[in-house]
Length: 379
Image 1 (cartoon, rainbow, N blue to C red):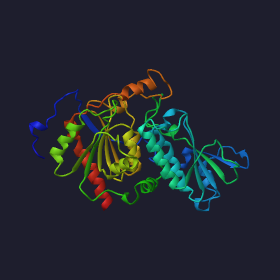
Image 2 (image 1 turned 180 degrees about the horizontal axis):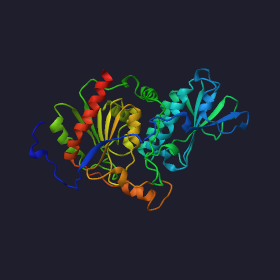
Image 3 (image 1 turned 90 degrees about the horizontal axis):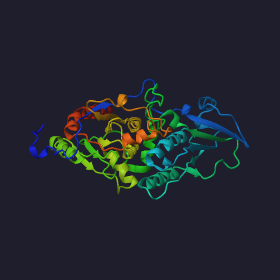
Image 4 (image 1 turned 30 degrees about the horizontal axis):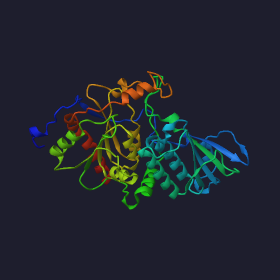
């Protein structure tokens, strides 16, 4: 490793915190992918609604290839305005995408219930609209009414209940483990979506080229803006630039939906603060490795499980002298008090001060995981 010159040493303009990297593990006994049991299914016959049925029992009576299902509606009911946000939207439409792939012969519909629809005032609104266009190209239609018109015996309503099974944070009572966040039902479903968006550029598997390291910041946001991104980029490029391609993106502002997807798809290692920009990990390839930086007292690693579903590896970046699990309270999102939603907002709304040197020293563990995964994939 090259000797670092004095000019590379960062000047501490802000507080500087040492971070370490810990590999994200699934909660004990929790599967990585969603299953049929995570959906509530209602069967329609004529104008009557049958009692709720277990999907495992339904599918045991017929195979999807010989399915009697004529129309399948994926019903999304999220009664808060943040469904307009890209990171929340993908969490509820990804299960629909997977569910439809289990029933290829049925007509597919999405029925969204939310307080507000995507508008034009936020950058992520256009990303949602763009994603819906790719859904439409896959013969997935969007309903504007509450019920199917003239439902028949071949109509089934699937209600996504992922929010009750996968927050990505601890049980509000403090008695339960960290709950994994579910997105898709199989890794192949993710690649199918990537092919729809990226076309021929979609690559299922790690690259054979030089490893590409991406530092992705949130400079356009006061929340979790990594103050030492530029200095970390200079340091990594100075120390490792002869071995790896190192790229810095200060913000995804100004990037189109497809440009963001391409950037993430091309990266082998991503170092980034926790945030909505990591929702684009849905376009990552197997063996892509993430170091996600969290502020002290806030731990919400649901983007890590999204990456793992795509075949990647997730690391948690946290204060060297702390523990994200023990220091982060179990937020009750629906309890808007100082110990609930407001506390969560307070903990997550601060900058990230991860020191360049600590990220550099954590990088070998991240590199080892990425290189080992690539080796195993190619064997």
